[in-house]
Length: 125
Image (cartoon, rainbow, N blue to C red; front, side):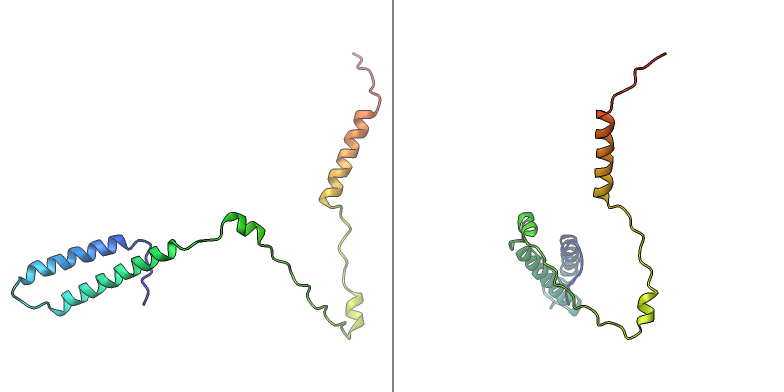
């Protein structure tokens, strides 16, 4: 079961402290109990997970240039078959014709150019 934490260092440290407390409490002449064995197993698992993440982080990743050069070309979709109900097709509202952004900018530039070229009236007070 993978461990889903952002930082394993704190968990390894806390596990090490708990393991140390367990070692000191049992003494040198006694056999390790189940709780201590569980702490050792958890510590080994945490360290393996840390090493796996480290190895994964060292793998080459696609750079920004690679991401820019990689393009996705959309495939054309199949056209839907004509519906049998022709009446429904006739009742579809068409959107109003609106000027595109480029057309608006072109119109504005033309108006500014015309205003610049037109003769100006003298300012009278």
